[in-house]
Amino acid sequence: MARATALTPLGVAALSLLVEEPMHPYEMYQLLIARHEDRLVKVRPGTLYHAVGRLEDRGLVTATGTDRGGNRPERTTYTISAAGREAFTTWLQDMLAAPVNEYPAFPLAISEAYNLPAGVVVELLDRRLQALEEQLGFLVSGEELLAKKGVERKYWIDVQYQLSTLRAEIAWIRSLQDQLRSGELPW
Image (cartoon, rainbow, N blue to C red; front, side, top):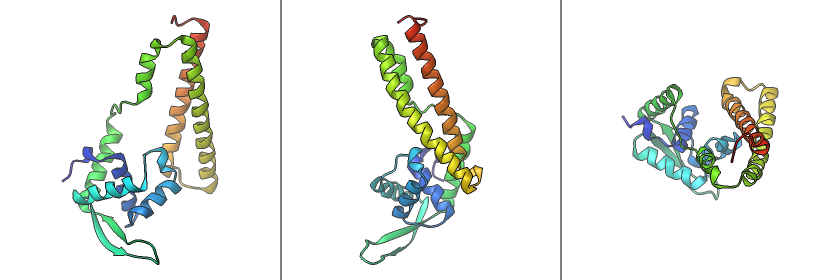
């Protein structure tokens, strides 16, 4: 069996789609974009094709056929293999059960922020807050639309997770800015 921990986020997204039904990489790409999964995983058509190729090399997916529609290029359809289902399930169980430090850049930037004047930090965090508020608005409207359409909540709990983490980050940044502005946090 292939090691589940070696799966890339894009590989996981591809395997997840193939759990639903066999499809070709471009169809996967279109579905990921239509579902706004690009907010969870960096996806581009070329990298998706390469990811599927690596999954095939590892025996996690199998080509089931090639077709050509009209003037379009040939498209190979893939299905998830038994080893792919096992690797996907193992990865999912591991990631749900145990926290993993993913080393995001923002905590590192905050840890080094003392190298800038407090006023500059406050100003830069204002710009970050603006971007975070835009993300928050997008997710809130997406959540409202999904609920209105009657999409089962289990399919979009990631939106609720992202809303919670965004709100927490926004609150933390505002608190830090208040401390910097008031002098409560000596700089």
